[in-house]
Amino acid sequence: MADWNTACLDWERRLLEGRSLVPELPLFEDQRARGLRIFKRLRVPDMRGLPMMGDVAGPWLFPIVEAIFGSYDPILQRRMIQEFFLLMPKKNGKTSTGASIMVDALIINNRPEGEFVLIAPTKEIAGIAFKQARGTIKVDPELDKLFQVQDHLKTITHRRMGSTLQVKAADTDVITGGKQVGTLIDELHVLASKSNAADILVELRGALAARPDGFLIIITTQSKAPPRGVFKSELQKARDVRDGKLQLPLLPVLYELPLHLAKDDGWKKRTFWPLVNPNLGRSVDEAFLERELVSAVSEGKAQLALFASQHFNVEIGLALSADAWPGAEFWEQNAEAGLTLAEIVERSDVVTMGVDGGGLDDLLGVGVVGRDKETRKWLSWCHAFAHNSVLERRKGEASNLRDFEADGDLEIVKRMSEAFESVADIAEEIDQAGVLASVGLDPYGVAEIVEAMKLRGIEGDDRIVGVSQGYKLTGTIKMAEVKLADGNLRHCGAPMMAWCVGNAKVEPKGNAIVVTKQASGSAKIDPLMALFNAVALMSQNPEPLGGRSVYEDGHNLLVI
Image (cartoon, rainbow, N blue to C red; front, side):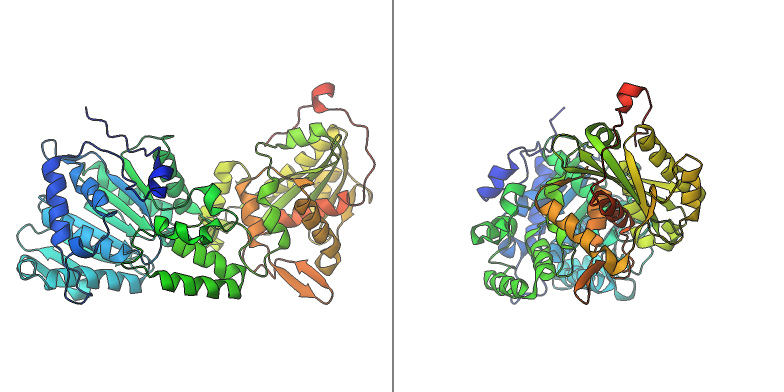
């Protein structure tokens, strides 16, 4: 058997040298040559002179086209690479490339009544994609005879084979699985915002089970926000295949700078621009990028992050806008991978705990802060609970919540009383270790949690403390910022908390600034607010309680 391993372990060197990111593959020569020949002969309908793709497309694109069509085994009638993930910035010809590839596939297809579908992110982009495919057919007399175009259905039909290419919009059309021979998804990160995006992708992949000759192509830019849902998982899978960590019949072609070059605004260096914009000088104008960069810098962090993500495939981090919580800038650098609740209790001479939220439309957040016995640094751990109805109430966040559940940082419960009991269990376990100083809560709506803690022997005004919210929390918020900036507030690096920190927005109130749920809108920040409550108590410098490690006294600390 030929080696169809699609890993590209030298991708960084290839990228820096301007070489193809497609590794050497044992392609079927006749299929490779035919697919590329037809692709190059397709005309571009919206350019003066109607040039052929072979004349205007960059040479970087041709190896991708060769891999798509050259991986088909005509004897076994099986495609050896069934999935393709292409990450490229805006204006690099995604829409025209996608339309031309699908027209090429429709021409080459030998399966009667074969179905092909191109899924665009919006109705407007679907119209552009269909217009591109339609124009490619209409400007070529031979193709115009071969295909019937139905504008109202956004469908192109092969007159002899009966095969079809249909263009659909992810934001308006019903997207379900079917019997597609080939599917192309444009801008996966937009599809990922749909609450049922994971189900859609499962259905689209299901078509490949009965179509070994089929393919699924994803062409996308980087997300305009921190990656989430199916976009996050598909991007990571593509990176893992590229890096040799995972072997699948998937070809990843990712035009992104290595992290060590992209960070600290390294992407602004013009020498890197053609590396991640392979169509620079063709469909991408360098002068345009220069103007837009100047404009984005003047408009602030939010616009600069958006510009970097869309034009240079820089993955957005946490500090996304001018009203972002200042501590977000330092959050990522304070992560201690693998830091657990058990380790915090083991290393700390005293621990405080905060709780926030708990309504049906909220998360119930838990924040724990321990003071390291040796370094005096503050060690933090957070957890959250959600009522299962929030998946319907907040469909746009459902994929995020499912991701956090899979990470083990969030529990979805059928009754909030289960969550209240679990919160009290966490407090009890820390208390039994002899290091719990106090638990801080928003004074409103916490009666059930207070009662659950009382049943576990945690009671009294010195143990259960109401933490004033709003502007009165300003000092606590600023202390958390300073601790993060100085590297003295460490955390476990949970994706859920990165999300919450990214959601946090500040709002001026007189001489104070506040981080509130109102300022942050519908975005969830409850676990962060719980952490602030724990920080408020730790800032009072509680005395060490003299507790022994749970590993010394035999208690079994809850590990989540």
